[in-house]
Each structure stands twice: as C-alpha cells, then as structure tokens.
Amino acid sequence: MSAILEVTNLKKHYPIRKGLFSKQVGAVKAVDGITLSVEQGETLAVVGESGCGKSTTGRAILRLIEPTEGEIRFNGTDVRSLNPEQLRRFRTDMQMVFQDPYASLDPRWTVQRILEEPMRTHESAANSELKNRVAQLMEVVGLSPYQAGRFPHEFSGGQRQRIGIARALALNPKFIVCDEPVSALDVSIQAQVLNLMQDLQQQYGLTYMFISHDLSVVKFISDRVAVMYLGRIVELAPTKELFANPQHPYTKALMSAVPVPNPELKKTRIVLTGDVPNPETPPSGCAFHPRCPFAMDRCRSEEPVLRELESGHQVSCHLY
Ligand code: SF4
Ligand code: MG
Image (cartoon, rainbow, N blue to C red; front, side, top):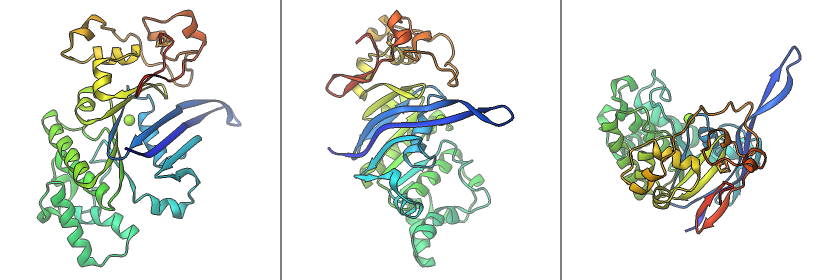
C-alpha cells in the first residue's frame, strides 16, 4: 500500500477579535497540528465529539477552507501551493459528501441539473452525453434514471444522500471526504447507504476519509481510526486493534459510552465527566486532563506527543 494523502502538522486557527479596533486577542485552534496519512483504497475514520475539529480537518484538506499552517500532499502534489485555476482542476480528484443531503442540494434544481453541474463546470460535454452520464450515475447509486427530472424534496432522506454521493462521483474522484454522511438518516437506512459506499469504493478504487461521531458506524466502515480531541489526534490505530485494545483514556471513555460486547472494556469502564472545554481557552498540558481520571501533575503542564506504541498504533498520553 502507498499513501495517497499525506498531511503534516495541519493547523486551522481562527482569530478572536475584540474591542473597537478588532484587535486580535487570541485564536481558536480548531485544528492544531494534525499529522496523518491515508493509504490508497482504505477508509480512514476520524472520530470525536462535536467541535473537536474533525469537519474542519476534512475541509482544510480539500482547501474548502484555507489551512493556517501545515503541508498537504495528494499523490505527491503540494495541495497548498496550487493557484485557484490549478486547484479547480485538482478538485476533480478530491470530493466531499456532506452530512445533510437536503441542505447541500439546491432545492430549486432537478436532480438532472444537480448532477450535470460539476461536469458542466469541469468538462465540455454535449447535452446528450450529459444526459447519459447522469443516467449512469443514478443507476450506480441505486436510483432510477427516470427520476432525474424530480426535485430533491421529492426523495426520501436516504435517496437524497444517494444523490449527494452521485454528485461526488460525477467527476471520477480518487478521494472522498465523507462528513457524517449517514448521521442525518434513520438507523434502518444507514446500513444501506454504508453498504453502497463500500460497494462504490471497491468498484472505483476510492479512498475515503470518513468523519463520524458514531463508533458503531466507524467500526463497520473503516480500516483505521484517528480519534480527535480539541483539534488534535490523541490515538490512531487499525480499527480492529483500536476496538480490541484502546489505549488513550479518552478513547476508552468514548467506547464505554456505547454498548460493546467486550468484557475487558467493561472492567476499564470510564465515564466522561464534564463538557468539552471551551476551545477559546483550552486547558494547559494535556487538553484532556480536566476530564481524565488518570491525570497526573505532569499532565497539567506538559503536552503529550503522538507516539507509536507498536506497529501502526499511535497514542498521545503520558501513561505510555
Ligand atoms: Fe490523562 Fe494525562 Fe494521558 Fe492526558 S496525558 S490522557 S491527562 S493520563
Ligand atoms: Mg462536524
């Protein structure tokens, strides 16, 4: 396997401005030094509570928002050095599927127009050709091409997400950031959409970054998992390994919150207390220390770094 995407020390800081002259008084460190790589053909899940920076990470990688710092290499290309025109062409390879398929689909457009749009912007195809491509796309995601003349509101939530996926596929991308793609759907529909995404991955050799707060979804879909807390990765491991052998106290706490049939984990049950700290004033040292049952003196002053425990399993905690 080789890495399709390599992210080094990625940061996205938002300035906090106050007063009459909007003086910058600080920064919200939404993403604060993420380093990871995604292998060709794999699904890397990024998990964490809301506000941990997982969506911001996905968007910054695609440059839908501009990173503050760091390096993003996609198939060897330095994504941050691309000018707008180069970036526009480059975007055909990197797409996004959004959480809320309704909000991300223009309600005034037919599905035909929604799916044609990316091709019109990026390619010069004849109208008949576009019609065929849209019909193909709809079939690929399990919708009837005869429904292409309908509007988004005429479809169910699951079908709308299929349209969102079809739109992401329109330009034959290699890499898709999926931001909570099934969170807005009924549980009974989630499995269908996840199965579809897996089939498409196989069929087209796609690589996914799968952002989610739902560990059961992550366990089902991903090959590896990165756990984020307040803008940083605290643990990264192959999915099986992470669920069998979580190391970071935060990961253990997340897993304690969902029913996992693993007696080992029950013994080490950790209940998350307190809220996620305000990212404007993150705690000193290890950002998890106010909520961590194992916090030591050192944790309050010294920031732990991500270290490899064994092959492929990284954790950022002073216990190790
Ligand atoms: Fe807990 Fe300290 Fe580890 Fe942070 S570094 S997770 S506070 S033990
Ligand atoms: Mg989000």
